[in-house]
Image (cartoon, rainbow, N blue to C red; front, side, top):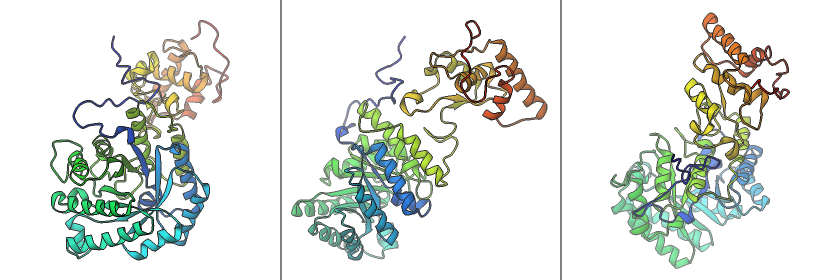
Amino acid sequence: MRLFREVYPFNAPPKVVVEGGDAGYGIDKLVVTDTTLRDGQQGWRNLTVSESLKIYEVLADIGGEGSIISTELFLYTSKDREVAGRIAEYGYEYPKPIGWIRATMRDLELVTGAGLDEAVILTSISDYHIYYKLGLTREKAFQKYLGVVEEALKRGIIARCTLEDVTRADVEGSVIPFVRRLMRLSERYGLPVKVKLADTLGVGLPFRYIPLPRGIPRLVRAVIEEGGVPPEWVEFHGHNDLGLVVANHLAAWLHGASMSNCTLFGMGERAGNCPLEIMLLHYVGIKGGASNVRLKAIVRAAEVVRSMGFKIPEFYPLVGENAFRTKAGIHVDGLLKNPEVYLPFNPVEVLGLPYTVSITPYSGRAAVALWINAHVIKGEDGARVSKDDPRVKAIYSEVLKIFERKGRREPLTNEEMYRIVRKYFPSARGEEIEELSEGEG
């Protein structure tokens, strides 16, 4: 029997094993950066000061030991500036608050006024943006950007330049020459100039054999090897328009982009951004475990955004209602025998969430037994009721009648199950019942 324990430890996220080539370049420097209060807010709705602080608090709870190193903030309204000031008052090293501005001297004044020492500066790089949006030539656009970056450096402000729409840009003719000029400014002023690769429309592809500008691995390597940007200064920011955002972020990480710019639960423009919590799960897998991540705090983060009206889909990974809930009878039977059969990892240990089941006519007696063990008995020593228990057979018979006679389509709710189960387990009220006597389980 081979269970690949070196990859699937079960009580931790699956490990990411990297072999060969330049994959894994800079793995020891991998971090997450956050843009929930910038891109997430922009793509969802305007957040109050109180809501913004609650989100910052959960970010600090999840990754405040150095896995989430920064959080981007708008500075345009009085509310934005109050949020920046209130976050600074926490005094946390991580996530570090940084400003987000356009490449204008007026916007740069906002960063100085907020007392921040780092700012994302929007430096749109594709000809779509330079010619159609800005109405400039490449050189005039670059001169505009470089002037603001240089002034930021003169003021002691670290610049993080967002190469907007880089996956539709002329990499050899535009991106690399511009990045080299940024690196010369960095050398002149002795401060980092970081480079954010923004897949603004989510058109990037995560495969090494895809050519520039669409291939994320080649794009990252080009910026590092031809542009001269140190891996720890390279950040990737993707969108999910074509459904590949996590794959693209992983490709960027594993080919040298140390920073992965994400939002909680993928909130953001259009189809959204890269989900921060998913990348942190992979972060733990890549690192082979990480003491600077509290994955169980992701559940509280979900509660916080739900309380604000953010809707997390039922089938969303990790915290969706269906994430660790199964309906198929064959899956349930496997879970009842050994949860490792149909779980990628133990959600109880990793996230503090139980795995459970929805009762449908296709769930079978195994689902009823698993539901009773999870919701009624809640024993710690494994399943106490088997699918062959006569009470389980009787309960399942009642379940079938509901679907057959009433034309029921949706799974039974927990409340409905409690009403049925209580007939056979009189103490079942959503709380732990008395332990079954020997021979009943």
